[in-house]
Image (tube, rainbow, N blue to C red):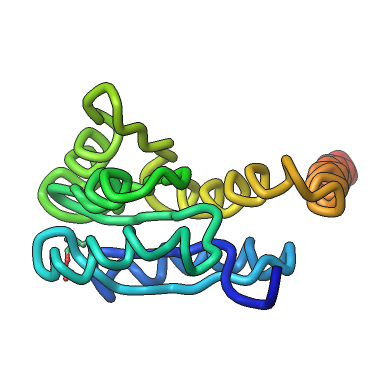
Length: 166
Ligand code: RP5
């Protein structure tokens, strides 16, 4: 399998980085190697198409694409690969992410994009969803995902217990 990236995280602008970092952090937590790239469907279309079409041959298994405004990035990437593509709509702009949500989720039949929530929650879930896809053939990741939920439950129970003491 090698040590190359299994997940490609691509974003339309450097301004998307603070949000897309959430996806990278989750992948790091699960020890899944990933690569972050900045490439825009509109501003650097040739580079974006090359990134998408070369991904599978480079050993990438899942692509996460985050973009804002008229967010065509995830769809354009999905058009050039049969790898699963997870889209993350970025907030900001006059419509604060609703534009990006619609642009990312409303794919024509034939080229799917698995669209997450707008912003940080979506980026975090994109990372988790990528781990879930990889876990289909990696029992170690499956176990780690179950443990993640156990820990989440414990954390909430602790917060509830603290609240009851106050
Ligand atoms: C999109 O336009 C990017 O994904 C970003 O969310 C948005 C604004 O980009 P910048 O003007 O901040 O570079 O293409």
